[in-house]
Amino acid sequence: MAVTDPVGDFLTRIRNALMARHAYVEVPASKLLKAICDVLLDQGYIRGYRWVETPNNQGKLVIALKYDPRTGEPAIRELKRVSKPSRRVYAPARRLPRVYDGLGIAIISTSQGVMTDKEARRRNIGGEVLCYIF
Image 1 (spheres, rainbow, N blue to C red):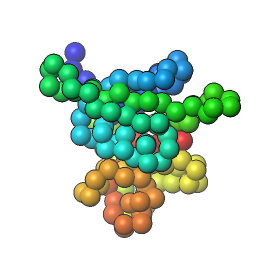
Image 2 (cartoon, rainbow, N blue to C red):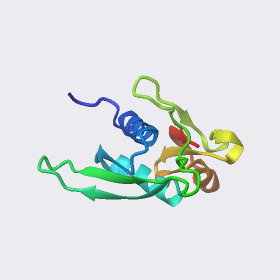
Image 3 (cartoon, rainbow, N blue to C red):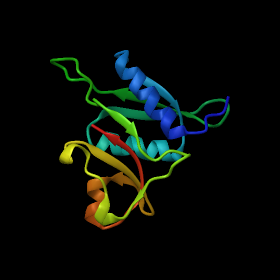
Image 4 (cartoon, helix red, strand yellow):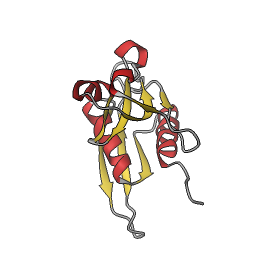
């Protein structure tokens, strides 16, 4: 069955893997999901990821999830999809959302690539608000 919301599917797979305390999660690959993984890696929410080629030429992303070494708590506590295929959410630079007063991040898809809300605010560009991570 075809997935109509790849970003929503991506977030749900990560959320489920974190609840099950998996070390890795596999998701179908795309350039957008790779860009989101880059942001998650830069912000310290995942340990790493790699693109693996598959026979159907789509590929998959294998994401190494991050947990606190002392408590075992996941680095990602909350994942929330904001812009959905049925309701797109866009924000100009001056009205980009702040997640938990700056403790979390919003991932924004802009004309200059996928970035955090802080980076988009710094560059003074708006875009589509994909999700919140805390």
